Image 1 (cartoon, one colour):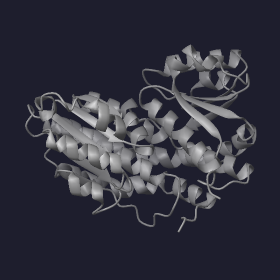
Image 2 (image 1 turned 90 degrees about the horizontal axis):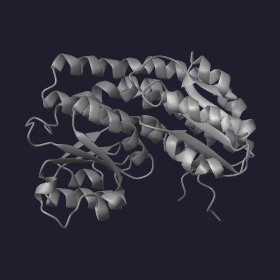
Image 3 (image 1 turned 30 degrees about the vertical axis):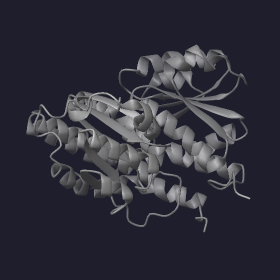
Length: 360
């Protein structure tokens, strides 16, 4: 039987994110501290973050946290790339003996991901599953599991599940850093920052609703929408494009800020809606340059930026403001919040429901 998807559920899930973060934080932290993935510093030298769809986007958004807070090399891979290309299976097993492979799947039923974790374990890697579904097939093949249960979850393009996956990854990065020798007090500070981000999530969600509703009128008729970002914002860009596709059946594409300047800058129509993830951090200045360039070419520019970023406010046609301050490693907790409501309102303007494109 086909699940019953509604636009109202998308808005309910967006409204639940702040409370989800508060509720899940303690439960997830307790589980993470029970996973001894990094107690021997010589064991874990690199991390693979593996998933498909939203799970892969969360992996991209969390990569910086593993680099900076855990102090390990980290590579996000789609499930198929990990399985067939990503880990040099046919070479010496020692290549994976120092690896931690984290498989992310809300349902826990991604067949390619299950096969990838099985193969990684066979070649000497430690494996960890992050899922919202207890006792799923993914949990049966992983050495350790983080289960992030979401009460009252209903059929919907991934919104609550995306944040839960991202939370699991961020707390794992912090704990891995602690187990590898970072001061426990520093890990405690980082964990408190993640929990405190719930207030910023709540304030940002409230501020975005009406702006997303008005913006939907502006972009619903566009043949394509671009979403641009870099660093953690690249994961957000892909996630936001996916929500527009899943909810409204419109074509949207996520792209790296720099790559857009080399390729998609040439695409038509000239007034194509172009969303720029411009959160504070390393790529913010480049995001401003790209937004300025895009507007000069005639694009309709939408900036996802700090609420007091006056430069972006002057450059963009529309600003989707982020309220509250978080370090860049955690910025995806805020930057993705517009995606669900905007996709919902675009679908409403087009009189469409999620996931209906290929139904009879």
